[in-house]
Image 1 (cartoon, helix red, strand yellow):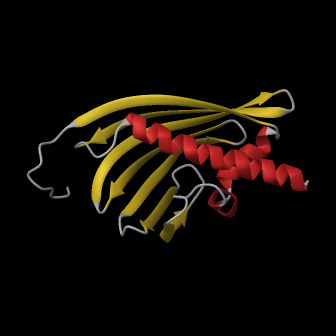
Image 2 (spheres, helix red, strand yellow; image 1 turned 180 degrees about the horizontal axis):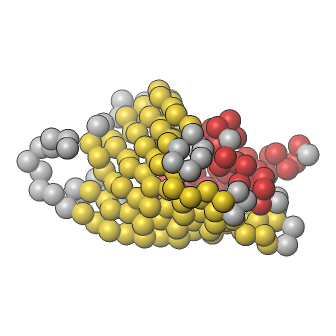
Amino acid sequence: MTERSSTPRSITHGSFSLERSYDVPRAKVFAAFASEQAKAAWFHGGDGYTIVDQLFEFREGGKERLVGKWETGRVSQMDLVYFDIVPDERIVYTYEMTLDGTKISVSLATIEFKTAGAGTRLMLTETGAYLDGYDDAGSREHGTNAIIDRLAEVLARESEKA
């Protein structure tokens, strides 16, 4: 257990769901999660963020880690474990987030991939325990929306090339 300051402890529970439609087959959308190179194209902290450590084991029981440093000097870390992967259909995982070494949340997330005409409908649901006032479902939902929007941009660019 990590020692923390004398700050009062709190937990905020929250859930959110996001849906997106992509004009590419679901195998291509799923592949954007299943390959380290493909995921790196869209799953990152954005401008002002440098990756300092990374692990990618996309398999049931596999782990993923992404540690990045912001221009401000803040360091964020995501440690993830995959529990269920059904190719082209779903991914179920848990992850914890730390900020400057302090655990700020623990979450369960599911991603479902459904055929929608010639394209794909992605449904992401996350339930989290947000710790000691460092994070909440609203800010996590905002950040997840931004990441999923980057996925849409990458899939659109790849579709234009094909």
